[in-house]
Image (tube, rainbow, N blue to C red; front, side):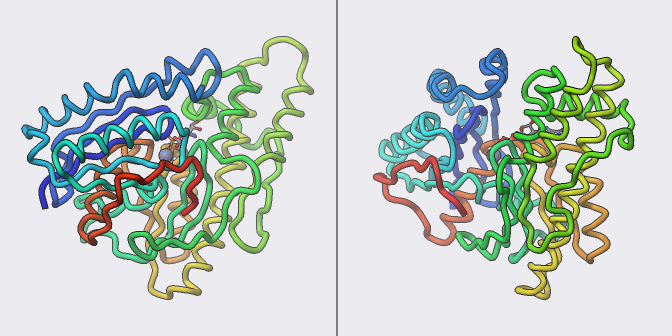
Amino acid sequence: MRPVLGIESSCDETASAVLNAEGRVLAEAVLSQEREHAPYGGVVPEIAARAHLAVLPDQVRRVIAHAGLGFDELGGVAASAGPGLIGGLIVGSQLAKGIAIAYGLPFVAVNHLEAHALTARLPGLVEGGVAFPYLLLLVSGGHCQCVAVEGVGQHVRLGSTLDDAVGEAFDKVAKLLGLGWPGGPVLERLAADGDPRRYAFPRPLLGRAGCDFSFSGLKTAVAHEVARQDAGALPVQVAADIAACFQCAVADVLADRATHAMAMMRDGAPDAHVLVVAGGVAANTTIRAALAAVAEQHGFMLVAPPVRLCTDNAVMVAWTGIERLRLGLANELDFAPRPRWPL
Ligand code: KG4
Ligand code: ZN
């Protein structure tokens, strides 16, 4: 198979990448729209779509040139076609379809969640590769779920959040503490100077059967603690202690839910032994450490891709394109992007 172009535009990263058939990255680019959305404290869909449109065609041209290729040397074009913000999904998949039509290439409509899931199989990431089936813990700004990944296009959702996604909880708590957006990275830095034992925040669903998640009670507990403080700006040490206690509660919850998910996974697939963590929150060191500890206790190997592959990127989209094209799973050009597209 010839190299495959991947395009990502489902949320607030504009990204393109070209991988050869063996999964080696020939060229890639990621542009975050953080600056455009920061004044609004979150992603504004219309701004996101227009920013993708302004950047993507040139970015794709540059990436192809960087790879030392012409469009006519590609073997296929893959784009995130859902779930996500519909405007951005349309921009990315229309561009991909246009290229596919112009050069007579197969088009792959990629499920963004499957792309996160398949990242672990990128050649070179884990020695010997990651074989199906494995357990995926997807923790991002929009998603929080445990999935048994049984094959390309074969997923069983074991549990998911009943309210907020975990990244969303980080962002909301960061806002309560007067930090910027996106909140996760700033909150993690602040928590480094805090005492994780100062406040006893709840651990929602801890020990409960299954592996669903809930974060709204924890977020409310933080809001109450902030409200109890004297009026005016929070003292830095109080904010740091709250951040540390919140992060610690999240890590405990994720470790507990992952423990249940590993047991559920083993029930269905006794040989399964890999736990993959993906999504922006997987960048958090405390959370990675907590997951590594429970994985080891239960005989699982934790695979945490490097942060640039955990957050939204086009390498995972191109790789999913390759996995699907190898199986002959191209899509028709009338495939309509799907804002909702559960695994
Ligand atoms: O996967 P991602 O880049 O985008 C999607 O949501 O699809 O994830 C972004 C989320 C944001 O909510 C952000 O606050 C969170 O991941 N995040 C973190 C950290 N870095 C990013 N949360 C906790 N700790 C971090 N270091
Ligand atoms: Zn994502």
